[in-house]
Length: 173
Ligand SMILES: [Zn+2]
Image 1 (cartoon, rainbow, N blue to C red):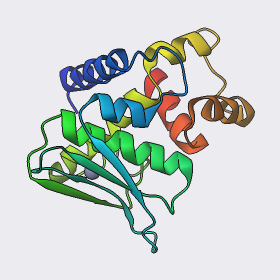
Image 2 (cartoon, helix red, strand yellow):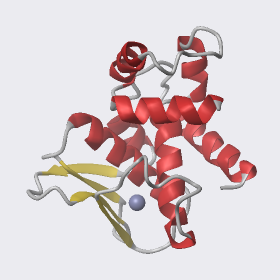
Image 3 (cartoon, protein in one colour):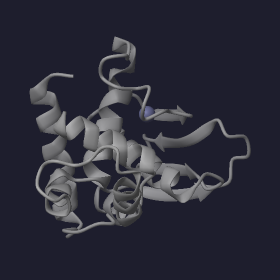
């Protein structure tokens, strides 16, 4: 993804945080989604495959989340769908099957996945904002071997340790 696009996505996420008056973690993601005009619904889809949906075209955009998934995953799904909503990804509705934070990085993805890469980037910026992380990290260097540090940060931000590790690695490498 181009640097300018990454910056744009970061600005959009920061704007959403401002609207929701959020200045510290954990980001109240449902509130953020609502402040962006979406309605958030939860339903237990058995079968692990379906993460969530963005349903556009009615009076109000609806974000549907698989409530059978882990809380952290649900938060990421909501943030990801918010990304599709605000980044102008066309299409009336959008269904997200199991998506992997790790696999869908900018390098390995096909061009057709670009909206997924962008939605994941937005989700990371929204749930683990740079401006919060800079405050929470002791200086700009972090010991990547410190699982404990990553785990405690992940808990503080309400995300999986894997998502946090990936986020930190991408920020500072
Ligand atoms: Zn998606």
